[in-house]
Image (tube, rainbow, N blue to C red; front, side):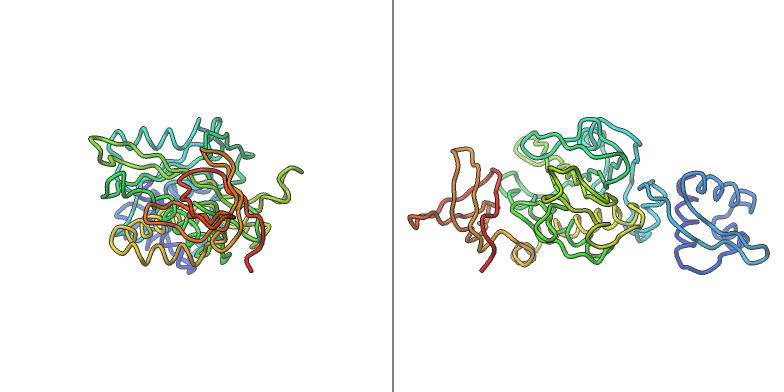
Length: 323
């Protein structure tokens, strides 16, 4: 059972040896059941050393973000359901269907491979299987669509905090919500809202983070980076997904309660503000200095003639380094 496996892993995460007798007492099951559960976990990639008369010791986590592996990293009072699908058309679609069926806020869908992954502006998102953390998280924010402009930016803050918490790598944010390290893209975020009578019924945050790639195709080498390349991260994707859910929920909560503080956190990580940018907007190409982000989450550009315009959507290219 997932619950038993989650609790077994949580015990092993202490780093100490844990006896089968201790785990069977804590779980209220037989030692034979503990052995059976650990065998099943080993089959899914958990590496555990068993020492006679001493107990079990954790050697390595499974890389895949399996439900029991992810949930072991949540505090017992703040657990969130997880579904792992080895292959799926799109985690966004799977999460949206789960949300319609009543999944709670914080529920997450993860996969090793998306057949039809989606990026911003309808682009395809594709990755070699098992190299990235590909997930979608369900939100049920308590504000209206007119107040949701900062939701993608809040998600970016949460994703950046999760990366730094687990891997120690500080990511910057390119408006509205791409994560960059050293000017190269680490992660992309997509948000889709479902409305009901002008209220947000739920939102789905899709996030793709480059984790294990050691190299990228020639056309991406100068524009993409992974956590392995930049931070030497060789760990599991499970704690990264747990951190991603927790930090995105925390950032969205701060946006609802203390929006000025969330906006300050976004600005602190921004690599867009103070830069000259080129933008492909719905009304055509624009070029100017990114001076601020307004209350609706729009990027405010100062154009060459001195006038200002607010960009609500579009591709932004950083034209020159911050002075």
